[in-house]
Length: 384
Image 1 (cartoon, rainbow, N blue to C red):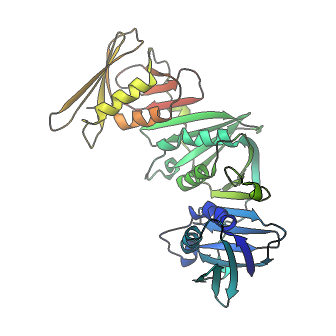
Image 2: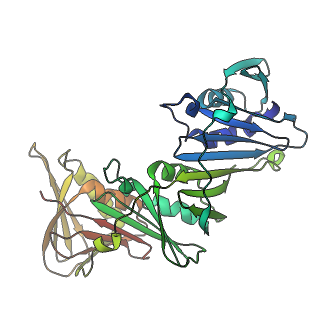
Image 3: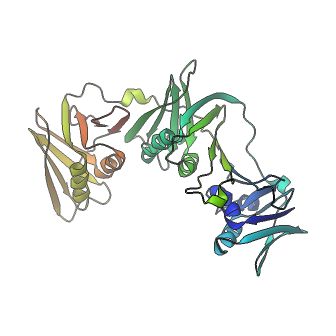
């Protein structure tokens, strides 16, 4: 195997797969990436046995390339590439069991492991496919990822539900105390509603790869995997780099479990509707959170005609009180919530105003944007 390549051409695909490579690993080869060199392209493959990324970079016709494959330490190769000058040319070659790296007057020798020992996710026949814009998929994840459970014996809560119905892709997350739901348009015509659960690591890696662009992506849902291919984001291309092309193939295992029936926990028939400034509400909660109990993070709402009072206190007998002018005509209500759960919602909410729907002190609050029904957020109350 031999390769002569520009530093940025090598660095770009390597950076795409580095995030999935295990830092703490039980198998030494999981700290490596699989490098494949062909006459017209190179590819890097990284995996943690749950998520697999394959980044492919086209080579220019005049570049020297001799086909071969080997696995090499990901972090060390990445650090070497980053440390070289931006316009450096890098030569790679094999010397017995070592990968030799030459650039200018710099020389490196890296230990390798055989390519045939590198694990790969098993092939999974695609059961259903759909098209969705990169921007919509990015928003679906950004708007709901915060409500995934961190650690839970109910392992299906530690992932994100992808639900496909007629021309719609929905994501739902919940940790049992709050729920986030977001809808986006997709080119999909399933014969029946399809649900899959993507694990946290897969969600995080996919979110990192996505760009805020309108280009269409092709998602394939298999029996055990979700697959999507994305173009490598190059930002502003220099004129001399215009002919460089690349893409990333993302594959994630799915969680084998049944997501709870989230429709049952969506609040129905709330008769207390509050309209208020999104940013004023967020800032008031942020200030009140300073004096909440560090363990429980509770704030109390006192709601009455056109006024919302937010109160917080802690074991040191310190208190915070915020008063907001709101649009509300109805009975007085006193209710308490985890302030961090509310802030997480407000940090992804868009629009000038927010809409709160409540019914009584024991029922969950429904938070929406006033301009659109695409997003729904539910937070359970707490006792103080």
